[in-house]
Length: 212
Image (cartoon, rainbow, N blue to C red; front, side, top):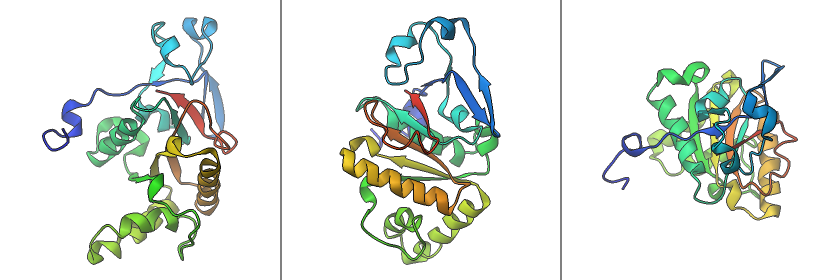
C-alpha cells in the first residue's frame, strides 16, 4: 500500500492513554476527571478504558512537555505507526507540533544497531552510523553533523522502534545504550516502543509509559 498511498492519506490518527499526571518543566500536574477517579490507569490494557472515554492524547501532545515516552502495545497495535505519525507531523511542519516545531525527527529500528560496537562519536554514534551508511557519500558526511548539532541544541527527537521485538537480555542492553546517549546529550528527547509486559529500566530512566 505504501507504493499507492502516502501515510497521511490513509492514516487513522493514533491516540495514547493519558497518565494520571504529567510532568513539564520539572513540575508535576495531576489530571483529574470523573472517569479517572473511578477507572484505574491501565496503560498495559488501554482497551479496557477506551469505552469509558478516559482522557487520551495525540502522540505529539505527549511530547510537548519534553518527556521521554515509551509507547506500549501488543504486536500489530500500531506502535510503529505512532512513530511515523510523529515524524510526518514534524517534517511537514504541522501546526500541531507546538514545542517540537523546530525539532529534527530521527527514526531508527533497534535491529540496525550493533550493541557490541563502538563509535568515534560516542554512544550516539551507534544510532547514527547505520543510517548514514545507507546514503550516498555526499549525504553520509553531513548526516552525523546535523544530528549531533540537533542533540547539542536540544532539538533532536529520537524515534526508536522495535524494542518490543527484543528478548529481555537484548532489551536491557538497548536501555543501557539509551541511558548512555542521554548521559552524552541530556537534552535529547526519545520516543520508543515496548510491549506491555516488560519495560526493563525505561521507567527508572524517566520514560513515561503510554498505552496505545
